[in-house]
Length: 264
Ligand SMILES: Cc1cc2nc3c(=O)[nH]c(=O)nc-3n(C[C@H](O)[C@H](O)[C@H](O)COP(=O)(O)OP(=O)(O)OC[C@H]3O[C@@H](n4cnc5c(N)ncnc54)[C@H](O)[C@@H]3O)c2cc1C
Image (cartoon, rainbow, N blue to C red; front, side, top):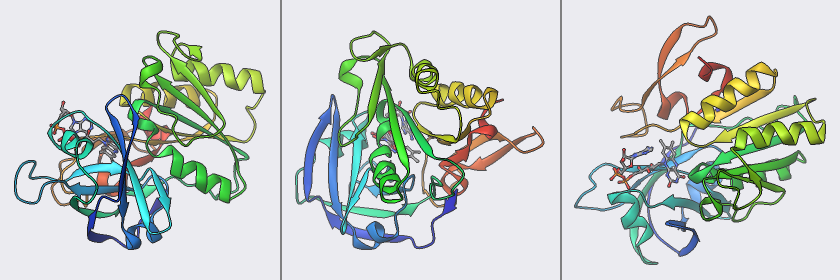
């Protein structure tokens, strides 16, 4: 996992907004310094409202980078995200980033990336895909959701889907889809899993990969405040190399972690 070097706080204006699914919007934010330094897996911390609530910034993965502009994919779950989803082009925001570490792609120790995501966890996968493609690494997306309406596949290629209710793609969860995919492709060789989604999904995925000795990196979520290691609001408990529990600040040492640390 690579750590970010240059962090900038940029006042910008929303340049485009488009719907991406039920209660989900993609916002384009011109942020040249952040776009230039960003790596897949990094996030930004956005001050949505200059004077009023919510007072704290809200964290969002970098969904895509095109030239000087970054995109974020936002699911409306509360006060801050509803303001973002209902915002208009031209509205002003403060964007701090790129923050956190990133997925490690150019390591040469795998041939195929399996990008596994669930729900809004699909947000970082577009940027991951363009990075893998530019590095000449094969990739396949496995995207899960409760039903057809919850699948977020906008901008992705090479996608297989799973829904709990069977309304689209494989009937079952995305870890079961991964198992089927590996069996069908006979692809248990040099594959690496990159994943983002709800923590219970990531825990099941981490165990699945550990049991089959598949390398795996997970982007975790937690409630987060400052995004830069000052407020200690995003502490999560992981295992260290000796199997002992240890706490990390997800904003500083994550959000991407080695799956081995999330199996206990
Ligand atoms: C590193 C990181 C990257 C993220 N990337 C994205 C992304 O790309 N797109 C996206 O839509 N969301 C993302 N999230 C989650 C997003 O930050 C929260 O949904 C958001 O902060 C909620 O703000 P709110 O004001 O709308 O909700 P609030 O009104 O504060 O809370 C509404 C509900 O959301 C829950 N909630 C609040 N914060 C989080 C959180 N961090 N994770 C899960 N539930 C939360 C609360 O417990 C509450 O139930 C990310 C979170 C982290 C930590």
